[in-house]
Length: 293
Image 1 (cartoon, rainbow, N blue to C red):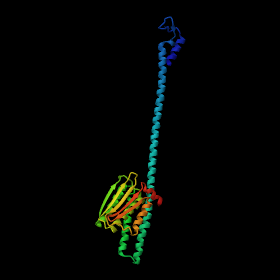
Image 2 (tube, one colour):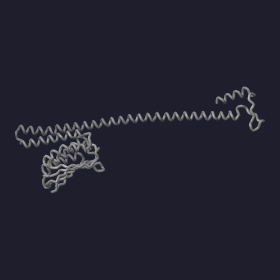
Image 3 (cartoon, rainbow, N blue to C red):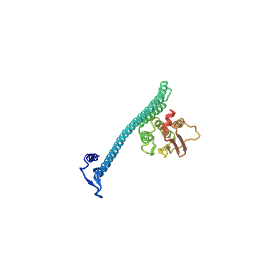
Image 4 (tube, rainbow, N blue to C red):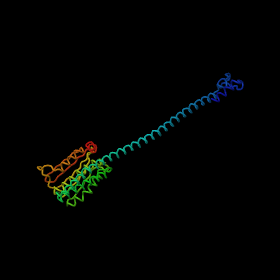
């Protein structure tokens, strides 16, 4: 455009300075503005200007997109961090609430049981065997509470292995073999302290009943998880079985009520070949347990 303006000024200011004829007809005179060279230069200048404008516009769009992408990435990172923080706080709050319930359960359950033993001991109307049984039950329940609190952030497999490690000595001391089988993913999370405590109490009661009444040679603990996420826990023995004509004992009734509170079912089958107690928990047992507390 600068060349075009300079040529216009020269052509208009001194028309005779350049004498240009058409290359096709010498009789046809051309002004400087209409020469092929100037026209080509003018066209190239216009094309170059348009190309530069388009390049600048494209560069502006690319830069804006990059800045927008960085802003979105930072915002997503902030949202993800905020979500993780909120989820951690909710998990900690839920764990704290469950532990508070466990503390109340410890106070009302173990505390009440020990207080009853103390009152009976002061009246001297209780036998040493009854005191021993009551203290053993209190110690077992206390251990279950500690196990459920310690395994709040662990997997179900880890919780069951802790239970196995603790109960194995008691079973083998009675001259009974103890076998275990786990068929579920190692990363299956535990349902929380409160639900875990109820599950461990059911397992403890099942093992204790087998040791006291079944005359079994072997007790088996099995745990499997189906495709829907439901968990099946089984205590089985090869003892003499349960007399179906006899009324249900308090221990079995407690196990059934605890299973119902978890939203699960307790299936008991027994014959001369032994007894099998199966606890079936839904995919999310903790939700039902919290609703019932």
